[in-house]
Length: 541
Image 1 (spheres, helix red, strand yellow):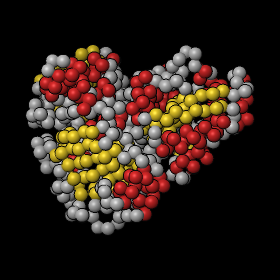
Image 2 (cartoon, one colour):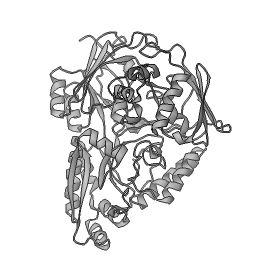
Image 3 (tube, helix red, strand yellow):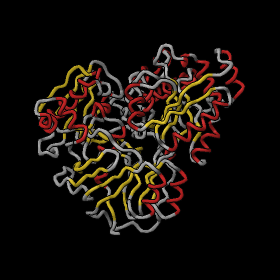
């Protein structure tokens, strides 16, 4: 097994990274490189001559519509939390957006041995946590075990035992092998065991409470101030292990959920970068005003019926099918995305390797939707609830869906939740009826495992219906060693998900990061899961 493979990745509701075959270690086979040209619109940056090079100094003032709740206790961290942790916390492996492949970070290399069921990480030497304690194999083992105890390590059930070979070598012995394991383990943020234990003075609960508000990592910036739903400040780590980095003195981010306020702040020069812009109209306006735009590959918006409760009406395939027939996805995508969004009729976007050309099991058909409702015993209609976050795109989408479903007799209550309640429902406790949600799209097809596999990273609550036929295809795909076999199985799984009306795919969004002309950042080009903030810099202004 000497060919390269693609790993799964963490992803994020509003953040997920695209992965392609790695380097730096021996990997088993699976997907080949994927042309990512169509994943992003052309970046409309200024055509003025580029500056001579990066410049040191400055405080980057950012604004963002989402904000973290937990700083470093990984078992409780949401995708939003891990996004904000990137300046101060690092992982063993990460995705390089420029090279479009997995690269070493805190691990300088890795080796996968499927025959002996081991994954070995060779760690960077000379790296220290912000408290001065060494980053070594014992620290990595402690981080893994903390998450294993809490049941929060993705594919943790595959681990047999963890071996500290020497100070800078850690070996994971697994019970079985899949083509996703090495990255699922490598995609783990590392925090100081000493700082955690010291904060609690032997009281585990006190340590956990401290970790919810504080963090000690190895990153290019230190977390120095955090005010929930208000403000966060990171300051330069002068002892950072990457020589000569970072360039910035500090990064400040303010919580600004109202997009009109955020846009006005950027236009007034009160902020340098808007890290999360989901409104296409605002992006276009700011671009016309002279701001630079980084486009991300977008997210898959879907409506997910819950079948966690055995008595849920959504166990009835006919009702799930009726939902899909009732929604005009072309009109919806055009209305919400102003022509920039792609309507979806399958669990795949058109430039995704698992896309099945021409597959559209349930085109818009109101009469068909009404007939299915009647057949299922709801000729007089039914009532339901859509849970969505307090986000303009989700709110507008939920309102539009409310109108579509009303036309066939489905009365919808839109439950708009704050981010804390929303993420708790989506990732921890589950939802009762329908969930409107975004999920990341990876150009290697690994997001099918990340979000909708037999052991997903994100939607782990058991709400989403998965037939045995679908799960069998997913399990075969995750074991595949050849690229063609992998993609064929993924396509079969996409079709099976469609036949099952597993979820109702709606459209593919576009994300953007908007910044002043003097700011240099590559942020959001690989969703929000990767932010190489140590490379960000600003020209004099």
